[in-house]
Length: 282
Image 1 (tube, rainbow, N blue to C red):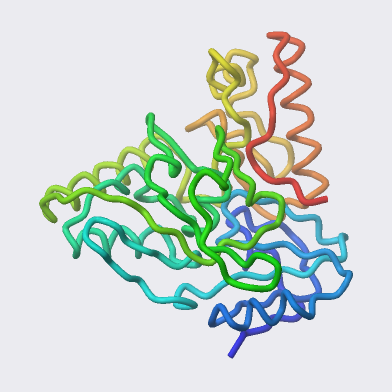
Image 2: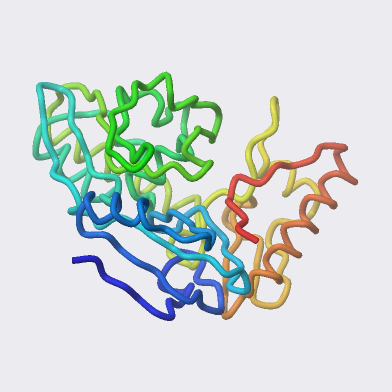
């Protein structure tokens, strides 16, 4: 059965843990429940959410939040191809991959996300991205479940067609055989690298901005003198200049105001307009 939270605090839905709440959030325990919701959904705007690690949501917006349980569909393997459910957290995907002796997901170790969100945004780092692994995607298409070929995903840098509101329910990844011990070691090394360079022990949502062509957003922000600055409860991390940290009860409006200030300051210093990577749901 689906689980409904009403009201749902943003501190439970988003890794940045914004202040405020939305009227309702629903987690579907199976794909059939999600299909039924699609068939009966009202005119109220809806937001398909994973673990909320790349999203800022305005609680003043009348919106229905929905997401899939990590066990809404099974994990299945055919050779080096593995189908993971969209709601499955990154850590569980890595654990399963290690057990299967399959390599390829180590670059995502330590990221507080779920498969569906990572596919939707085409998550990537260190020269790798989800588009390198995905072979097909299961979605709810016109109130029925369908498999889409990877070409239909329209993957681009930190973007895909699924950001338009199409619900991903599972994805098939092509991995490669490897030694479980080496895969586990590489995953642990990726986690330690993240912890050493990113404020993941704090309330944060990942990269604020996309990297402009030929530049790194963090370097542009740092050279503009913004790294480590604080505005109320919000800090531009002294550990990584492309991460915001919520030190208390940051609101959506406060956070957007800080992001706007960062964009304006970098534009004044470098003549470059940074584009948000985080989803701003106003």
